[in-house]
Length: 210
Ligand code: PRP
Image 1 (cartoon, rainbow, N blue to C red):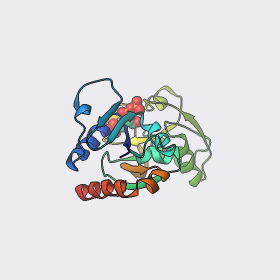
Image 2: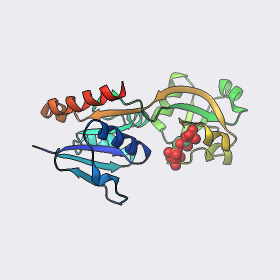
Image 3: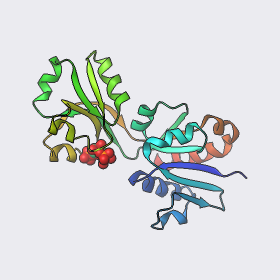
Image 4: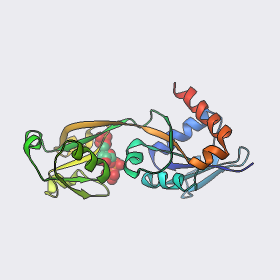
């Protein structure tokens, strides 16, 4: 039997995913140890799990280096990869929003040429295009809340979970626009070649989350 390979976004989501896999009878003992290792194996079930940066998970899945990926809808929307999105795991629930200083709420309605900082340039561009608002997108890689504080941008487009990062930095949600959660994505070829095995796993996950 061929190994079935899973790409997981490292961090809290990977931990929650492994708990879910344990519940459906797919544990990986090796992964519970504190280690810098990136690939873990369940030899009995012929499963491999690897951890990568969230934004790389759809890439591994599109190219077939992983058969299945678990990653946030934010990353799927931003990466626009050619793959199947199969299941909403309802983990890591949060939403995409425009945020900024409170005084931007009114200004946003009339202002043009808004400077928007984001880790999600494609999502930000699509959102403002739909509003027919002209924007300049500035791509950042993290701690995006800094941008409006230090004058790099007027607003940010980012994920909000508890809202505590915004609050701690004197910022607020100006417009909420997309609910997000973790999804199961599958490589198109793997779906043909390993259809039965993959669908069994997805069905078991679906039963647990219901
Ligand atoms: C994410 C996001 C916000 C924060 C939102 O950043 O970009 O900054 O979490 O969470 P909250 O609403 O619960 O405060 P992350 O922690 O992934 O770090 P990063 O900014 O370095 O990417």
